[in-house]
Image 1 (tube, rainbow, N blue to C red):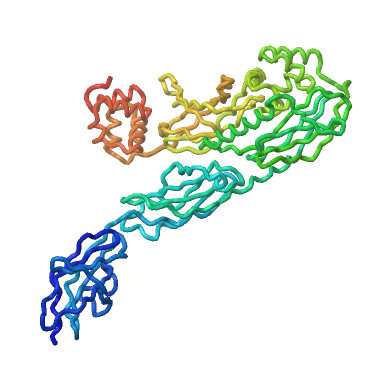
Image 2: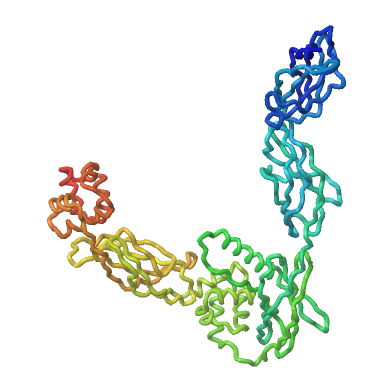
Length: 572
């Protein structure tokens, strides 16, 4: 018998993300009627999906529907956003017929499938770094963002979203509680919408470690006080407590309210300022905590210890015993005490003169101490912050002048200088002011000093005149709150290197404009060094040319002569 005819009008309709309806007209053959149909389906581009596609991959259609003379079959289980190829052929009692032309269609795109449950990549006592695997299928539309939610595991409260929308498959969650369990879930978004939430995962932050016990506890006694100091090197320490042993029992010794809290706050502020200062090249000094215990008896042994405290607990240093001095020891003279009293009264802290005196610090000694040492004294004696700056200013002596500048290197338009720092006399140097001027015994114009600032004991002075003498001098400047500056260093005179002008036309024009050939050659060399030509200079307006010559440090009379020679008129 002959094979059945090819099914006609093979179409698709009602295509969704996961299904489509195929329909066709039944071939008419009364002698050899069609008994069944076979369908071949493949993804476009997959092996076996080519036109004609061989004779494999056919599956019998077990059941189909009929309406108005057309047959139909709903194909389910398709994947969203995928292009498919379908072919249909009829079968009679003995053989199959020719397949239909390939029918191509694309299922609809939809929101992605859920990502994997979040898993821990890194953790600390206050943060979690988590990551997850992308959805196994984006369902035809690329994943563009993720949303991560978190909640405490124990209370099962409301979910809270991580504030920022996440563009990749990882995120860091901060400001968590130590040693706490959290539930996390994540979902993905494409152009069609959000996926369902992933499976939940439970992760725990680390236990906050105990602080290390303070070490290197030092004690400095006077006849009625002991000043304790110890290094602070643990950022997670939130407080220190100083204890003194009295009658075999440890009791608090830091009765001055907020002394240690204030020191910790200042250290945190200084560290933040240093991190924000991109140009800060100072080495970070080791922070030291101090506390003075006053009102002790002379010639008596006392025992102290210090506790470092944090959220994780507290740890105590080894105890240290110290013997206070005898009261009849050598102290300050009446004259020294009188000067201390005048100093403290002028700064609004008269009551601290006795405290300085008991610690054997007179005004002369304090004024000669480096600023860091003065700061340590203020810490030990617990001078309030509002009085420290006025005391520092009152104790400062004048800065000495820097040494005479020395030349490090020279070029045709610059000279690099260096000098020795001045005697600071206990006053910090904030920077230096360098003044310079073109110099020469045959120069009939008044010397006009120009200046520049620098922070180190060397600097490069640019934009100088070639083959010319220049005078230099330096002074040191103090901190703005202290005001003032040092005396000027002795003047130093250095000469820039000569430079030749190979531009014959430029040299000729300068000689025609100026009376002195040697000076005309200098001006030509300077202009040539800056890559100016006669054509460009003549094309300039008179005012711009005059301004250019002034910037090149050409004398005022020469500026007038050159502008007149080039333009026939002088610039205002």
